[in-house]
Amino acid sequence: GAVVSQHPSRVICKSGTSVKIECRSLDFQATTMFWYRQFPKQSLMLMATSNEGSKATYEQGVEKDKFLINHASLTLSTLTVTSAHPEDSSFYICSARLPSYNEQFFGPGTRLTVL
Amino acid sequence: AQTVTQSQPEMSVQEAETVTLSCTYDTSESDYYLFWYKQPPSRQMILVIRQEAYKQQNATENRFSVNFQKAAKSFSLKISDSQLGDAAMYFCALSGGYQKVTFGIGTKLQVIP
Image (cartoon, rainbow over all chains, first blue to last red; front, side, top):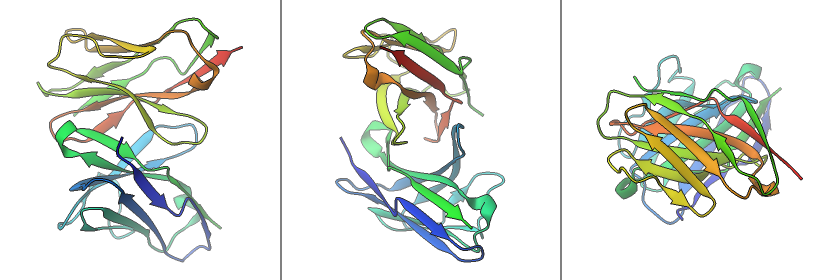
């Protein structure tokens, strides 16, 4: 099946700093990628839809100036958490959609801890 | 708007036995897809099985099968011959016209040796 990677897998940062998370589709081109956030023992909550070459579409309640998304190529989308605070600590998961099958393949996730 | 409801927060099954996880959904789309994802402790989301709404035949993947009742908007997952490696969180998910996927809150499956 299609493979999606995420980097880093785990990051710890100080409050007020910015953190960038990369999501790559390794063996297919993804015009659309998705970013999710998952709190402990909870489901995945969609944060935004990332479209190659255009602005991301954010879900209601997600601050677009805080969670910057860039989808510069067909295989790479990045999520930057700006001025991170402890409440941003969470598990962030990306997925890439395989267009012909309307199926999403998920990255392994990134655990962000903000001190 | 589309919704997915999983009413069983936790389930347990004896190894080698069969268990069924429940899921109901709602959508205004006529064309949609339903999924069951597995999330083991590693937290990697793994697709277990998918069902296209236009197909009447229930999807099967080895020990995994679904009971898709379109009129009732029900989409249950049956795991046969349960194995220890099946222990995980299972999420039911729906993808409608805009391709966004909505997830249920999950069911934690415990497999008892």
